[in-house]
Image 1: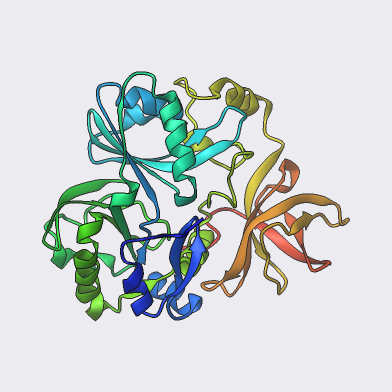
Image 2: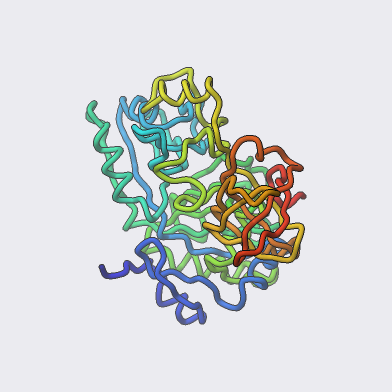
Length: 362
């Protein structure tokens, strides 16, 4: 299958990005080094091109009803300009995908889904669309930039009249940005360092990207790849679909009970409610290594006796903390913060400790 290219593919190659296949797209994984890019976002400002993400528009009087039926969170609580984190539960107790729900108007919503799941999610939403909601998959027409870091406001404010400094987490506004009309600017950040997402049509992508790079120059802006995106989100304990959540992980096991609202009916709600009442047998945890080792996905998590009690789903060397950190599923009796666990690294059991999320404390 041929790799898809994001609109600014050639721009990233010209910037010296190392391009790799990711979720069916040719994507920039790094420009300089993961460490340098990670620290740029934590201390200054960086720009990620995440145009591989999917966007679906839902319009009509039954749009909210459809969202309520297929997502776990309660989208009736949204007002215009608000965003909600949610997931599509499947019929077997797992997760089709996690997503963001944007309320653009009473009868207009945008769903932002993971690149690797665009086709699967589109089929899922379409399958449940029995009430004639107007669906439009605009994924191939849109570019998305995530400008992240403590200097993001200073870098971007000259480009728009939208009041960025006072934009609350999980809200958005629509307006002129870098001379382009009707740009959606939101604050949903996946790095834990603050910042904004900018949704623009592909034909305006280069103009907007160049304007951001120019405006951010005095604040030390750099393009950032997927490598640093992974270490940044992992320090925050944010789930990555395909690693920490998938078709077989329940939102309750994944610590996503807070987005699973049982005061409405949704796909597989009854089974998930029964699971909540019975209690889950495994939980997604964050942990930090107490010995010098880097945990990796699929490494076994064992107890002191060497018996397997779980598995690592994401792991890395934390650039901010200078030690190995990770996430993984363990049996519930090993899930309490402070609990000692061991990660089996090349047949050696290395000591680690369960920590409360986020792993990186502010």
